[in-house]
Image 1: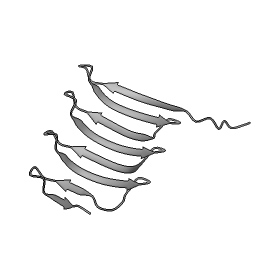
Image 2 (image 1 turned 90 degrees about the vertical axis):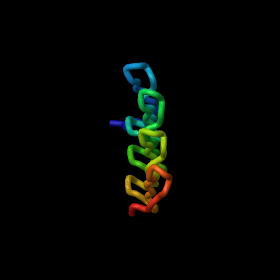
Image 3 (image 1 turned 60 degrees about the horizontal axis):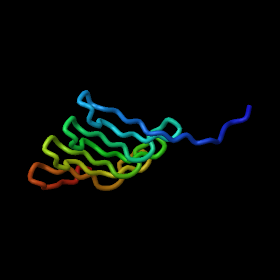
Image 4 (image 1 turned 180 degrees about the vertical axis):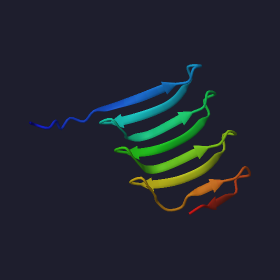
Length: 97
């Protein structure tokens, strides 16, 4: 049996009940591939994670309920790489690794 070498790209979009965008998830052969983002019902960002072939690979950011970035880290092949920074409500930061 011959195996297909065709790559399938698609983007999944999910919406809140009020029709605002909840999630944007690009896929490659059914696995997250690219920047995945989620937003709350008002359109404020919740998180951004960069994936490569289904694994976190690149920047990962999380925002709190006040639109403040509170966590910023990098991944390589699903493993945290380097500094992981958390911010408090007055923008002080600490390395949590």
